[in-house]
Image (cartoon, rainbow, N blue to C red; front, side, top):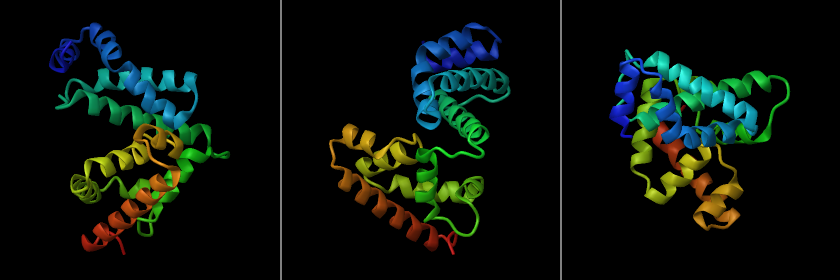
Length: 184
């Protein structure tokens, strides 16, 4: 089923909207949630919450790209769930990824900065100017929270090559943000 048809189901308040969403994007949403939560049950719960939040958001919202709309909801829910479950004990993957991005931020935390429209606009502008290969590696690491080994496997690269690529991208991002007066 096409995305616009699924969105119409939400607008018409048809329960088939959730079934069709799950059929088309269930694996994708689960993939995002699992990369953050590293737990099948928690990921499934997160995806179910994604469907509930989508049901509550459409209408009034009408997403332009349903896949990205669902990805953003899933990712935010998974990050929040991760924070709740790991308030005292921290799993390494997410902490490492956020620490890596911390190099590109100023005094406040990267999570707080990502809320500012200007920062998001500048990061998107930066990503648009990267090569497709570098953009893919960046998103796999910092959007999907994939491990270095997973990125190596997907891109047929050595671990040192992936780490070096990510380091250089972070340095370029830092410079880009300095030029935009976002980074001090």
